[in-house]
Image (cartoon, rainbow, N blue to C red; front, side):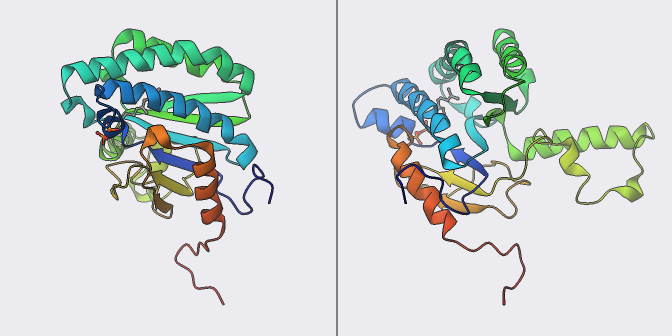
Length: 241
Ligand code: FPP
């Protein structure tokens, strides 16, 4: 198979928990933010690789609802990095056909960042080559709680009949209502946890826990992970003959 040809039967929606920036920086005697900056450069590379690899949707975990517990220096450094990233990448995203969306609770983010997020979504609305979703102040339980609140409001307003609620109802209220469920969730850095990421949406996803720290996660490693996914059989609870 050619190096960059799409792995056959490859995943259409890949979600990534980008872990290991801090350890990568520490191993070089540098502050944690140095690792996050290296991680941001890797995001660029992996997004660009997606169209050739047959990945239509890429969802990345950039900041969790739990990450506020980090030091003030790290949190404000990460917020500055997100602002700068959006400003810096936006024109290239439009050129490359990257449609950007954000999931998570925006209300706790500072106003300039929220404005940039809105602008990025509006600017890339017509892009169709790859769908990049950035999870920012995102937590799976928080998302389900916010969705449930809106669902309950619709019941209270008489817009939704409680008897009609089934498995298809809640996803319409989730932040990911416009996205297909992920086929593959990758976590880098060797930790085997899902850390509150896409809890509802990943019910039938495959998981890959990769030993590489996120700043070292190259396009070649990404391609190999997608290949090994292509070799697996997904049964969605059914039995094959
Ligand atoms: C986890 O590594 C990483 C994060 C909490 C931040 C992820 C952010 C980036 C990759 C930066 C760029 C993203 C965008 C969208 C610009 P960690 O700090 O928990 O690493 P550790 O487990 O080694 O401490």
